[in-house]
Length: 441
Image (cartoon, rainbow, N blue to C red; front, side, top):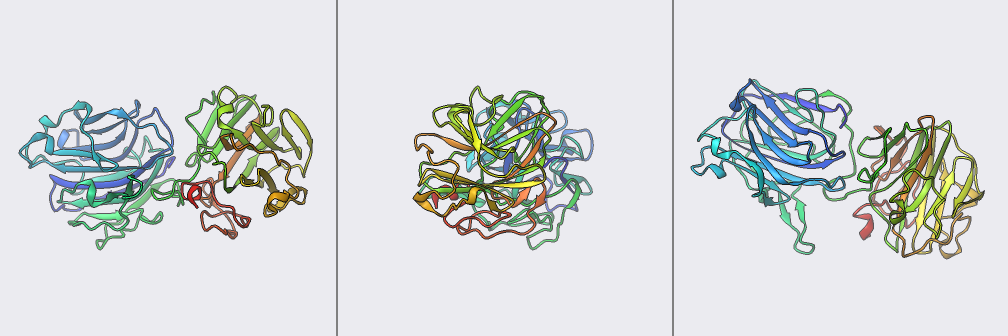
């Protein structure tokens, strides 16, 4: 979200001591205070409410002077969507029932801090109070939440379990989203960020929110289909900035830095992605790299690892693997969009420059591998999309299927034969985005 955040001034509530919040959350960074729900009407526990991730990556619900709940477990998966449900019901006779937290359908019961015994019966909460400015995505216009939110529902005056908003898939056993939950709204109830980035209330109420800063970017990545992003969990060293939903890579170091995607290819299937070079005055290389080879090589460039572990298309126009470079296609500077097609069925890969396949390549040529710079991909390798850059602040933006380069939407979406993802150029027939849906096509 960067500086993106929403605001709304609450009206007179149905009930200030009972409510339910349900939303899906995906983190982009770790080890920072990331609050995505906040409201305060004064410096007291009954006028203050904030929800998010603490800098130790534990989930926290707190007031002004009191941490109501803080989990024992940490939340470090930046590839996952977490379903968060907060059930506030202070009139309950049992203190532990006055505030409950559910994550992916399961009630959290293990806490490093649990102060629910200090919640008085029928205590009011800072969230849902009349005339109070409420925030989503920031703490009063600062400390912005760095991540994504989807399907944000709020019920004023009613307490619901997580099963209202999700269910367990009978086949996979995974917790899945209920895209159209049935719940009572109450006066201040609302639904936003449902099936898109609209902050106009999508419920029968008209409790619209206001974009108070930043850019609200729609993403195809959602609880039902998780797309690849750049892997921020791998050690990258200093002077590296990862932004825009972990799709933009900005190298301010003077030496080489490499980063890979957080999803790897299976040993079958055909996958496509695009990378836009925004700035380059030194060197940029794009391709694939085995995840197992990345460890300890984040400061190396692509194509240097032996035994078929990385392949690169270089901005000089050359191709390189096993530390050997040779002529291939056109050189590229910026701005430019490089397309990458990986055919794991036939062990070939191809590159395009602004929609033109280099070396007269044909990603649809199957086992023939027409124009493919590399035809020896190995099925026992955990290949990921990869980019390497060096010096002079090179910046690149990936489109793994979300339809954006950074916060800029593709200008004229091409066709996608597999119906998964939005790209600038036509996706070769049989190829798809690297996503959880794409892995199962």
